[in-house]
Image (cartoon, rainbow, N blue to C red):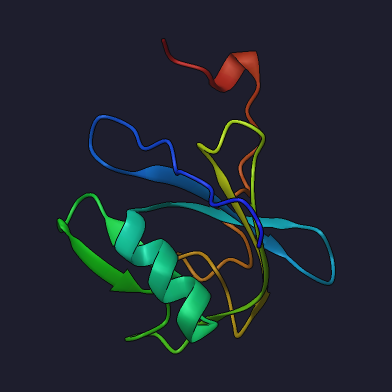
Length: 112
């Protein structure tokens, strides 16, 4: 029997989940999961998150149809970040872009 892993949640009971395209390796998005979202993701084969702004569970693609079909799930060495390798069924970003990471950050764009 394999060893059970204890998730290291932040002070809000969440952990970041990096979503990666299983074919291209592109990073599609970053979401947050609570233990229920992790369980639903593993059991359903589709990505679930906890929406920090709406304070509720969020099934990616439930309204847009842009679901993330889970191919594999990993936890990092500190048990505090999840990597989900998924096949996207449409754009991952709410803007309609393939990935949420489309804006290059440079010092001239940075406002601190």
